[in-house]
Length: 132
Image (cartoon, rainbow, N blue to C red; front, side, top):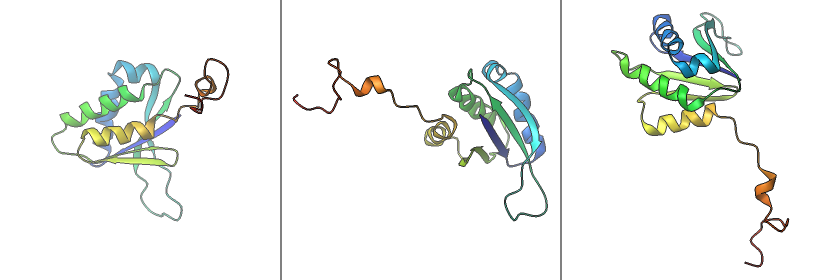
C-alpha cells in the first residue's frame, strides 16, 4: 500500500517527519519511508511539491503510524496542516483531535473483507434473525 503525506511548512518539515518515523520502531518495521516529488494533479503546471511517501507491507500498523504522526506534530513549534492520501482517499489534519485521528485511521486502514463464517449461525443457516 502506498501512502503520501504532505506537510505545510515545506521540505524541512517533511525531513523532520521522515527522521521522526525512522526512529519509530513500528514505522521502521512496517513501512519504507522516503521523500519524493508528488505527481502533479491533472492540468496542474508549475511547482511540484515534495511529499513523504510510505510503502507499507503486511506488518503495517495504521494505528502506530497515526500515533507517531500525532506525537511528531505535538513537537512542532507551529501547528502544521498534514494531508495524508491513500489512493483516492485524502484526509487533512489541522488540529490533531480525536475525530481527526479517527478519520485518518479510516483512510489508512483498508476495509475489512466480510467474514462469510459470521454470516451463518451454528446450524449453517444464514444469520437473518428469523425464528428468534
